[in-house]
Image (cartoon, rainbow, N blue to C red):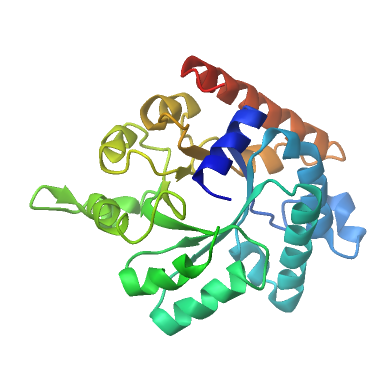
Length: 275
């Protein structure tokens, strides 16, 4: 899936929603625990209820690999199910990998070759040679961490040297490693006004924006400051959708929450004459 195809998906669904599958077994409805693979059954029901309203899914790998081989089996079952039932959807591995060349090559192989992901989140701290292996796959994406939504972002990402913040340097330097067809950036929603400055540096790239919903980010502000002529946004919501209800009606409620967000997104797309 390239830049144009992703925009076509957004226009078709009138949505730029990504559903984050941060599926903690401690938080899923208790009636699922009697099943052979409770987390997979939870994910399957969430996907069935939300796929009409979403253009992407983003399993957070930590919630699976913490359970060892069984967790990886759940992840593989989940992404295989999504790929089979939602063939046109963007599938992002929220893995936050990044290491020296040979190690990154193996990480890239794991997520972009041996598993059917379209994209993987990558940490840029070790520089270009740690990112390049992920960019060697045709029609796949690197989602580079630029400005995160957590409180600790202040520790390093806003460090200012010679009038340039660290996250700004990440954006300006790294955009030359890839193109708008194989690189997008993680930019947190909790300080949406910074998106205006970010768009001066990367006007055409897609931005993956976490932090809307449970973390307090404003979808309206994200759209106001971050949207470009091809939308340019993939906005993630995890807990606000998947854990909106803990009863046997959880999937129905998740679908309703996803539809509410999609409806709001449709309004912003319409305001920009993108649909």
